[in-house]
Image (cartoon, rainbow, N blue to C red; front, side, top):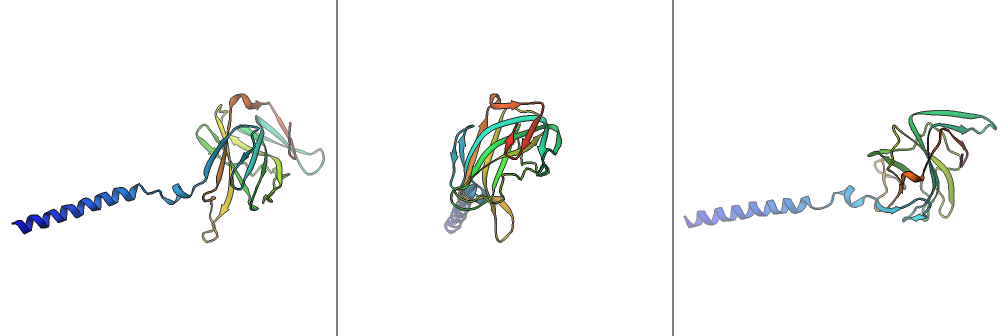
Length: 197
């Protein structure tokens, strides 16, 4: 009887250890939690620096209609949004390595990528050379006007093995809060290269 109680005690102790180990294992951060970009908060017209990124947001504009200058003089292409265009006038650069920079707009709980169909390649290089700064507009389309907006910038990272694009591990993500009184609302915006009018 005593041997049976001893065996039962060891079995219960082993089961308890397995449960404790499972609980402790669940507390260990997963790879995305431990390798994601580190957030650096800031504001408009503030020079924000991260590990390999340097950003200044000069202005933010919102309009239902934008007119973009083409490479041919005096030729413009008009774009109408179903909601609003948000144009961010920004200066970006890298500090250490030549990498592209990603930008996202967070508005009304939705993360939006820049519109690539509105071709604004003037002034925005595919790779940012370290030490050089480039000023250009970034255009987003949002379904409705929101008073709370945040623009985030981070380095673009492509995994060599999987060929997947992801947030750069242990890099910086610069987050710029945009107060509603800083958003310039206009009926139409004209974009000529890096100029927003």
